[in-house]
Image: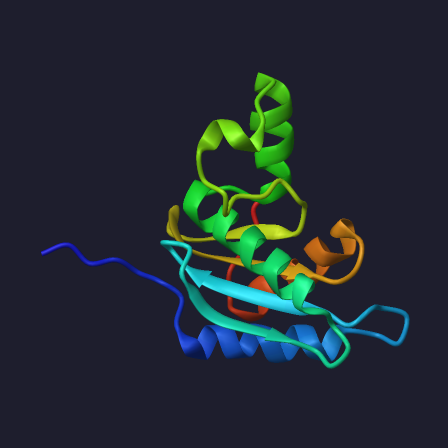
Length: 141
């Protein structure tokens, strides 16, 4: 029988708590989403003051990273822009090309996605890297 590794609640909560603690007074309130290898939510939360739109963006970024097996910025730059394609070409309305979604891999296999929304997309990605590291994974470039 085949088995699949995936992100669990323990790792997700560790990431959430670490990222929430890293937000400074200069940052906007954030939303975080962590998915399993199939892009299904394991954990999703937003800080007080973060709008519901931030939750939807974080979920889309984490979903995209997990289901495509790549960081959202790489999807945007190396697939969409490089091939002259659009999101519509993929036939999946849940995908996004916004930076800030990171793929989570263990031993070279996708086990989930993590994403943030609420600040600039570069700052969102910085927070996602903090969360990924808190879970014990190494961010891909």
